[in-house]
Image 1 (cartoon, rainbow, N blue to C red):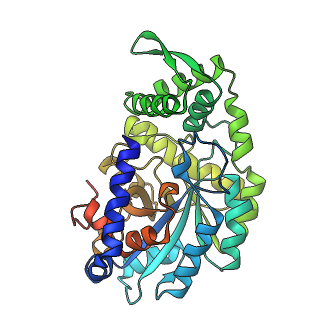
Image 2 (image 1 turned 90 degrees about the vertical axis):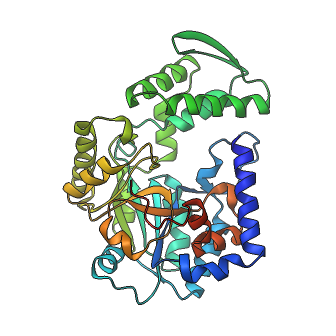
Image 3 (image 1 turned 120 degrees about the vertical axis):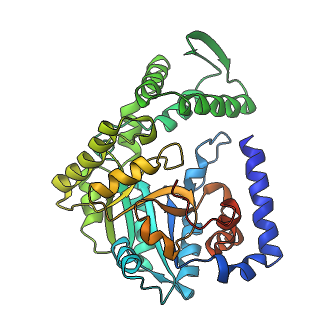
Length: 352
């Protein structure tokens, strides 16, 4: 299903690009600016089962994007400057912000030198349990379990189920099935307990994933010391906030800001909701973020920024630089606003 969906998306992007429709639409759907979303930047891996590859882009692709932006008429600005322009209605020039979620080590080791070379300001949204080495990157743990086993057993819906993972096709199907199952669980604790139990059963050390892939506080301090870098909050435990109580949501947003300030002497005023889709962040989360004093908060809902977003600064959309769509023509269509406009039914603000 995911491969079919990607094929459909590619077809739509190809049609918009080769017809030139994205250029004709841009004056009407391009908005005043955009926020780009990335997670990881790394060289391709020579393995076939990579269910989380949509979170990864190649260094060369990032460099091409930055060169295009530098040649364009858009300003590449920080989140603070974006906030100022949105509040003041300063839209004389279209702008773009670059953001990274989670705090992976390759943001420092691979992406940062590229961004530094092009003098591009960017933001890193940090889930504080990751540098504290207490976090659960459950989507990567799930991948690791499936990679190393031809058959796994799990308790699903109260029943002990044995699942075949012996082929590439089976591994892909199992990952999709379990991902959907976990996302549909009522609360975050059930999700994490499932992944912890599965990882323990098949000897996948969850702390080692965090240690191996995420920056520690010293590495984050290196980034935070550069004026190009904005450190943002991303909760403590990378919680799917839509599954949590209001008390937990408020605690995650407050505590993550306090931990970052204590560790880096930087108080974050910008937030990214983990997962960030409609099920993970909605009007309740948008309201709480505003009440807690965050200047901006970003979702993963697709879209560019319009003047109307001045009234919804804690419900901002982003353009995903997705590892499944690493072609410049796709990026051009997305950044023109044409792709997101079609995805949103030409609705400018999606904050419900």
